[in-house]
Image 1 (cartoon, helix red, strand yellow):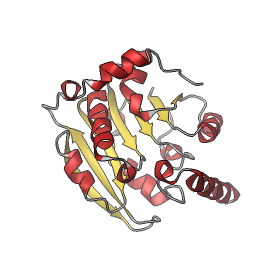
Image 2 (cartoon, one colour):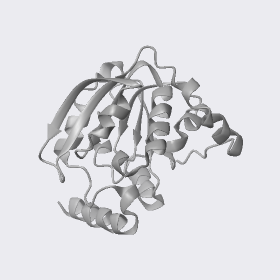
Image 3 (cartoon, one colour):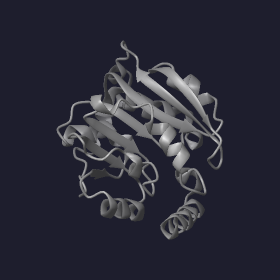
Length: 213
């Protein structure tokens, strides 16, 4: 209980510092975390990335290592990332979700089985949002799974459709604010890498991503 209170206070502090990148005044609830993860066929998942891991509200609900699974956690805030490393020392850590493909390349991972996102898509500009979704699609294996939530941001459904088939949506009232979870599969014909020529520019400007342990 004390840990939960400290996390909520820390999250509120981070929101006051950077409201658009934090996205909410409190971490995701346990019910939202469960809704994000319950549709994932874990026996088929060998590699997973969580974008916007925050205080670990979703991360701590990942299944215990019953099988080898590579987990990549992306969190922009240095303090939150440091705390995550103390909680989850076996995972890999990266600071920038927008360089997901470059992180995979440097980590010698070609594609991922699943990506879970807690990023505040609603606060991003349209171009940045579409670039990130393109990169997420390009980072997944064929028919890989993408699970994301949103706070009544209907535009996200339209933005997902060029890259993903939305298989299921779930309303989660026991979260503040209430959220909608979208369970998606990468489209079989989604060749997203052709749609994001800016990736080569990113790679040229920064040829490496530092892996934090």
